[in-house]
Image 1 (tube, rainbow, N blue to C red):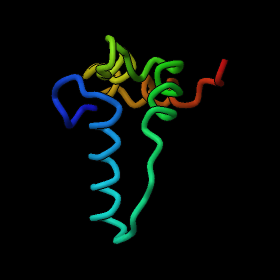
Image 2 (cartoon, rainbow, N blue to C red; image 1 turned 135 degrees about the horizontal axis):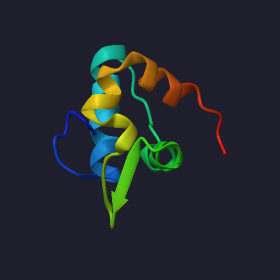
Image 3 (tube, one colour; image 1 turned 180 degrees about the horizontal axis):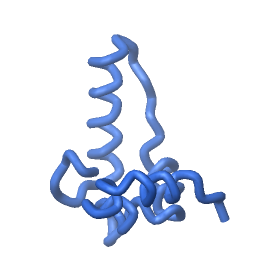
Image 4 (cartoon, rainbow, N blue to C red; image 1 turned 180 degrees about the vertical axis):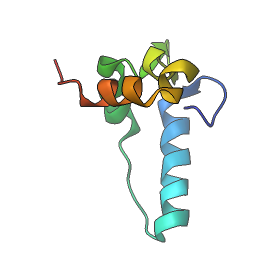
Length: 79
């Protein structure tokens, strides 16, 4: 989502992730972007507007640049 620079659909993200994984692992991978995005939404890492997804508040430049903030977000238990 950060690399896209604009809101993207789950299908667009799915294709981009599968392409990246294929290039870096030399294996075909069927990535479930929709499932991952919904989990990340619950954690505050993504936001949704209709069928478009974008980084959420926990992926803001301030949160990403602060290791303690980023670590706290990642280690927070699921609700």
